[in-house]
Image 1: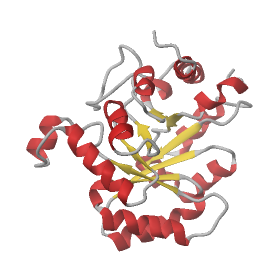
Image 2: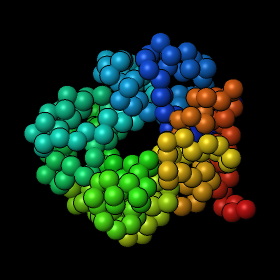
Image 3: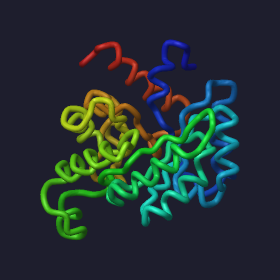
Length: 248
């Protein structure tokens, strides 16, 4: 079981609850029993099935929640969506490619809300399922993926957003070239030797932490594990090892 000395490392691992409904998610969460509640991600599929009341219940039960809805629409619509979610006390994603006006409208909606635990906004740069060919040929964005990620991270920073979602390959560049204070959240985490699935830019937990990622989103390696709690704790131990200054 994770003890007090591991709490800093444990707070950096976000378990992606990639389940179709609460009926599947709740038995999974029950595995933690009397343990301290892990940081969890609720994505679009689960949110659309469960709704904000269920997410609020998670928060009230002690789960830190990363609400990954990737909002992207005109500024007025996004601001309205954010206003509807501000009382949940979660971290919420929106697409940086929605532009500065959209991100600023979202931030203003957060600032206009009241509550002891304000919602925090995270801007998605380029999805970890996007590679060079897709970005250049399908999306019509020229240049390397890293350049696009940095441009979007700069835009998010200027818009007053709390952090960005990026691959582990780009976290260090964002810290160095945009801002060391910008929170970097890294999905696409895989354990050594695991299948990439639909992810293109992936990284192990150790490599992502070494590369500057603040928070790691881990889905399939944990939820598909024969022993999810043990796998989660092993990832936390890897991070803790790096935090102690081991570089082997």
